[in-house]
Length: 477
Ligand SMILES: Cc1cc2nc3c(=O)[nH]c(=O)nc-3n(C[C@H](O)[C@H](O)[C@H](O)COP(=O)(O)OP(=O)(O)OC[C@H]3O[C@@H](n4cnc5c(N)ncnc54)[C@H](O)[C@@H]3O)c2cc1C
Image (tube, rainbow, N blue to C red; front, side, top):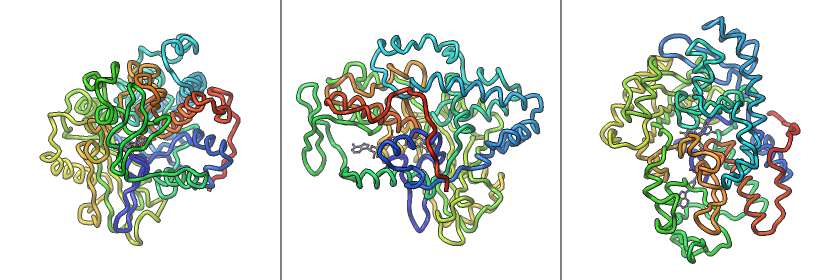
């Protein structure tokens, strides 16, 4: 259950497989509220302060706190001239987010939707011609400060130098709505949703792989699993889009999204993962630390353009037990280590290259306050891009799905009501609005509205897309 947002549980250790930053809880707060539940009662979570530390390979670090006065002081330590611009950046992005939010909450089923929602009017705000890094350059001169407000493009598996400037809203969302840690990890959110759904009468068949989608002409009429054929009036596909299409749906039924065309699309980066259960706890290491390579642009070029493993990789360490000691047996703790790397490419053979890359990362950990880590390992699991592809059904191991370029967003992303086939709907990172937990939950709401309307059922209760937001009461534990 939970897919990328599930947990690895072994020997008393519990790790999130994928997501560790729970952002913008508003989307799920609303969904819970619509069904008469309270997200924070169902899934207790804590807001982190500091949200994370960013350590720059070339020197300097920032403890990123949502307390703006303290944040300005942090920025001033490495770049006094940039500190006064922090609030201007956040204020401008509050406006941008409010203008763009309706686009995140409604479907884009074709050009007509772009015209109807007058997206052109938003161009001066969204600046589709500008990269995220260029946008940050309007506020911050120091490249480390620019990085602190743009590395979030990695949540989409993209470099800030290629990522559209629109995504400056990501760092804004962190400061405005918080970086949260659900107790038990982000997988506890999937488990909580599953529990509530069961209480409401939903039935799940877990561990039963779909082998084929069944068609009558272009209309999907069900699926075949090892237990037999299952007929349905409509099919909602949550599996990784490119993987599902290329393995479950015959190629001749698709025109825009044939196997050949999918192969030519741009895909996100992948991740090399180490899940370590270690003796003791690194009490001085924060919950989240992002370690940026000394030469960040070269590291990004290795990932996205050259498709080789960096000699000096950026990486991220989650030391979750400083917040949530229940994730490990007494006297031990968990370390989750993630290095963004190229998606599957002929240049890298993970069978051959994983051991050396693992050693490189362990050496790096030694140098960043995690002394003696290798000797302290009591549990270890490594997941490579090859594993994402073969074990977790992720096309090319591109963990963040189809890249979020303007050519692959809105109506140009696979549509929530999938127009290539009849009776097929999509949710998840491969459809609109895109990858990352909050927008994936939003994709489910968008798709549910379309599905209910198509079956003449009430969709009103799901709320009006883009409607003004009233605050959702939050019970913080
Ligand atoms: C390492 C990593 C770190 C991340 N960090 C963050 C983060 O901090 N914050 C954040 O918001 N997002 C993060 N993300 C992104 C986020 O995890 C994903 O965007 C999201 O979980 C993807 O959800 P999904 O429903 O699209 O796909 P999935 O979670 O992959 O769900 C697809 C489901 O379909 C199932 N499936 C596939 N094929 C079949 C089949 N043939 N039959 C039956 N079932 C099938 C799979 O088993 C899976 O359960 C991270 C992702 C990764 C990998």
